[in-house]
Amino acid sequence: MTSFRDNLLAGKTAFVAGGTSGINLGIAKRFAELGARVAVAGRDPDKARRAADEIGHDAIGLSGDVRDYGAIRGVMETVADKFGPMDIVISGAAGNFLAPVLGMSANAFRTVVDIDLNGTFNVFRGCHDLLNTPGASLIAITAGQAVNASALQAHACAAKAGINQLVRVLALEWGPDVRVNGISPGPIADTEGMKRLAPDDATREAHYARIAMKRWGKVSEVAESAVFLCSPAASYITGTILDCDGGSQVGDASRLDLARGMA
Ligand code: HXC
Ligand code: NAP
Image (cartoon, rainbow, N blue to C red; front, side, top):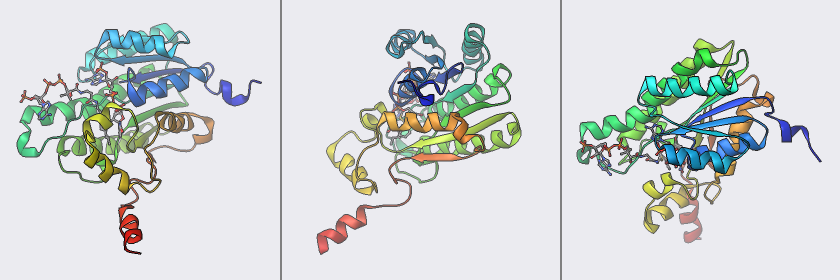
């Protein structure tokens, strides 16, 4: 039986920057399942084509670097030409690696800030006149590093904190016509981010102990958060950062394990 939810995004056009793998690809797939026309983009054109095939539903895969305003603007013009004005834009491209500040060149720091923060500015600034307004919904994919400082993450902490403030400023400036929100995923299983930031058992165990819900998140759970923020159920929500993280940012749940150990 077809329910309202099965067609929740019918007639909508969605563009996902950085949507060719991982969490963002999961979001793109879910949007397509719910009826949206979907376009994804990353730097690698072959990866983008493969992602579009995986999404199905006539999705398109394009290539462009979010650090290059002209390139990503061109990608979004192509999307609007093909599908019409965009209802949903996700900015999710990111780069990350573990490095202490003294093990990071100026170019290394700049590279991550450029992809994550400047990239999000470029995607959102560049999409505005291509949006279907009023009612368009923009979402930036941020991270807990935006609010909780983390060693070996100076670049990502600075970049994601900037993204959170950019979301809030855009919500204020574009309020009547465009809703602008963020999603902050926790540690999500089977992703490139987890491979890079929790590469060994000791790091994974330390991460795990801190999580209130005592499990890794799923790509599908972040995708459902994105569906919610783009749906009529979120029609009065703008300028918010939605934590989809099993309670990771609430605090450190590992003390409970210690207390249990003492009992
Ligand atoms: C120190 C490093 C480094 C490392 C790269 N650099 N890796 N420095 N430690 N491990 C330095 C390089 O030496 C160079 O500086 C500068 O960074 C740029 O490197 P390039 O390789 O030239 O950059 P580029 O080809 O643009 O690639 C960008 C990248 C790469 C970020 C370095 O890893 C990438 O493309 N990543 C995309 C995928 C990704 O990271 N996904 C995970 C997202 S997860 P010099 O001075 O030598 O020129 C996430 C957070 C999730 O965002 C949170 C999970 C809990
Ligand atoms: P991922 O699989 O590495 O996805 C990154 C995507 O961005 C890919 O499609 C990649 O394709 C694209 N990309 C990277 N640099 C780009 C650039 N300069 N221009 C255009 N596209 C670019 O990562 P993930 O782990 O799923 O993370 C996705 C998002 O969730 C990121 O914003 C990340 O910060 C956030 N997040 C992840 C976790 C986690 O547990 N994984 C936790 C918190 C937050 P190309 O390589 O082809 O460019």
